[in-house]
Amino acid sequence: MFNNPEIFTNRTQLTQKIELANGSTIQASGTGTVQIKLPHCILNLSNCLLVKNLSYNLISLGTIMKPNYKSLTHDKNPFELVDPNNDIIPNGTFTSGNFEVTIEQNQALATITNHNILNLHQAARHPSRGYLGKLFPTLTTTNLQYPTCNLCKINKLLLKGTFPTPQRKLQFIHTDLFGPIKTPSNSGYKYCLRVVNGYSRYVWTTYLKSKSETSFHIQKPIKYNKTQCKEKITNLVSTMGANSKTTSSLLSSNTKVIHTPPPLHTPLCQKRELDHHHQNQMSPK
Image 1 (cartoon, rainbow, N blue to C red):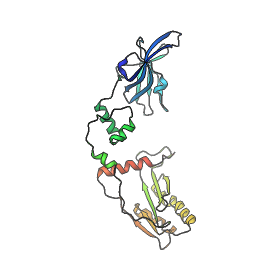
Image 2 (image 1 turned 60 degrees about the vertical axis):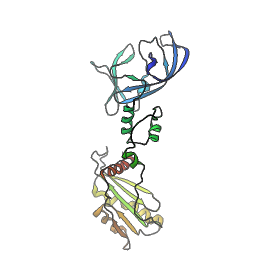
Image 3 (image 1 turned 60 degrees about the horizontal axis):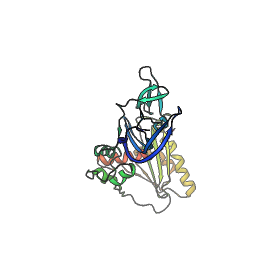
Image 4 (image 1 turned 90 degrees about the vertical axis):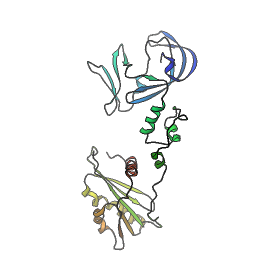
């Protein structure tokens, strides 16, 4: 419930009495959507009530809480709501069973200006105008004035490959090793080994603690392919350099090992491919 009609982005008239927890009733004069800017996020609150005679704006704590959020209490600053990175979302004081959020730090906004839309456009990795509207449906992007940036154009382009299309099973088996990761997982994994059947596009993903484990873990998908398909691997395509030689004992004499160095791209395209890999990798336990 809010007492200021100017913070509503859209509002309809309403004539309804609201009963409070203490048994008293108040008059609501409207309902609609409110946007509140917090230090680390923007809240879109729907079904909000306009009650002009309220002394304070009342927001349910459950509206702000998300999984892994936690509330902290201290002597000097009794109330803090923090996210998993321990960044403070709102803070304030605890009075008479209510959390009072400091209004100087958390101002309610009626609309988002073009400048803020540009910030959202940048944070979302420069999507096109249509995708930006889908990401933030409550924003008015029709009046957004910004040139179609180069990143917008690049995100619409496919990375065209020059590798031949396989015509039968096991004609091409692709192997790739990512790592080391700067921050290992809780279990200590630093590398990601990926084996792809070029014909079926089936992907095997294995996580390694050490690069020396590559020869051991790559045996299982290669043996599985040969057993299930009952055919010989014709070409083993690898970007791992000398590491691919460790699989020679599993391959027939007719198998050709193709070493493909990483493709040369501009730093911008290289960053885009790296982000794409990170988004598609599964998180190991």
